[in-house]
Length: 339
Image (tube, rainbow, N blue to C red; front, side, top):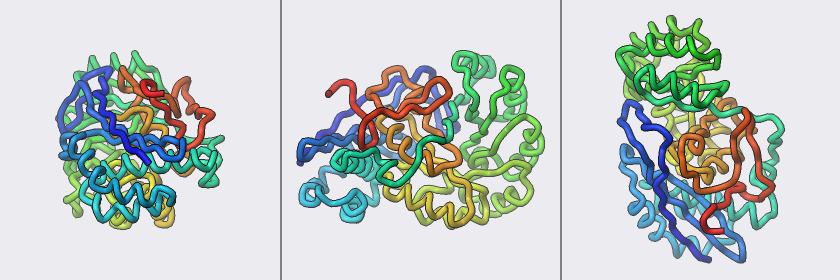
């Protein structure tokens, strides 16, 4: 068994702005896990506003390398349980390791993960393409540069409704609106009324996760479905979200990987919630892992590789309005620079 760590700066095609801040590049960690002639790849973005760094993630995984080596022949789920007590405070590192282990496991068993899970990928949801907060002129320019049937529009300004109305003049594509918890309940309810006739599919996390009274009011009075994001981080959050949201957006890095992510999907289904899986700014390594989950989802946000100039891997790709799966096992990811 061998573990290597590769770090990259993913260069964004455009300065990416959300309510948390702006960035032009995104550091990311690739975990390369090898055993018995097979190699698995995992990824987690070093996201500053979650207090995550490449160095911290590497240190976390190195602390459990003896556990990994001793249990490398076990299933990804078994290894996750063994390492979780040591990595529970670093879910991004847990995600990168779990993703690599899943990829390795699929390759050892000679199948893509979705087939191992008994899923049919003939009909899967298409990702949205994210338009970050910017001047309206630049947001329109981004839409024109990347024609797509489905956009996620990042909001959280004083002029959000005016922005959506202006963007609507330039495309008939479906909009999903993500305010990143920047609205009040009163704003969100009023905005939902204004937006319901503008071909908006849903509102993603418009309120602060701590505003339970506001979320209750919005759930009752919103004219659009409301999807949890910042309110749905770990497995226990799914049940907590059920009274306040119509669906949940699951981020693999936040919950700790494919292992808990699949359990969260199952729980959301049991509760009658719509299910979305989202991404950070990551490469095709992460997008390929998300791609294995697509048959289980209603919505997906896996545009990470579409937003960067220097993708580092081949794998599950999105182009021509479709999801394209490689003829490879595991997640299907393959680093450009090391194979």
